Image (cartoon, rainbow, N blue to C red; front, side, top):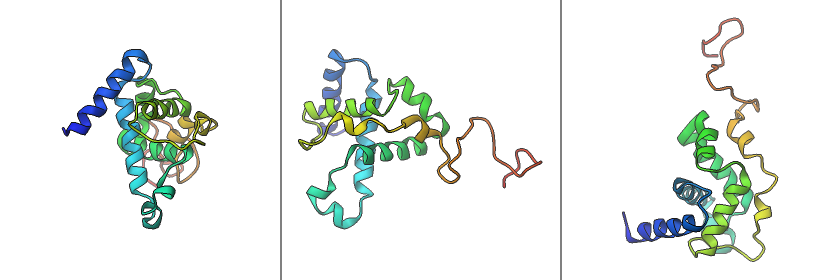
Length: 149
């Protein structure tokens, strides 16, 4: 673990001393999602610091992508265990890290940028069909349950 990683986790521990609402892992996951989302930006946007900045909705979409990849259908359960009950919680984590100097924000960035996004719906909607996934139920051909389509 690098010294910057240790400093980050020390910062998270200090935040949690006064605000223990979110589990330690939630902070690391939000920062990981931020990093992966920035890395996925088109090269011309990535090269421009002003355009590299992510808005709340962009970060939330990245958070959902990473959560679905890492946790699959268990993502909502993991988030609830970490104290994340909606998109606004992810925003609170971001702004706590901004206040401690771990992340940066523009003057126009606010917690409102994280409101109105249905995080748990995004975690459970099948992106291809637009339908909700049902844990434990496999999609199959009509009349032939359990067989792949």
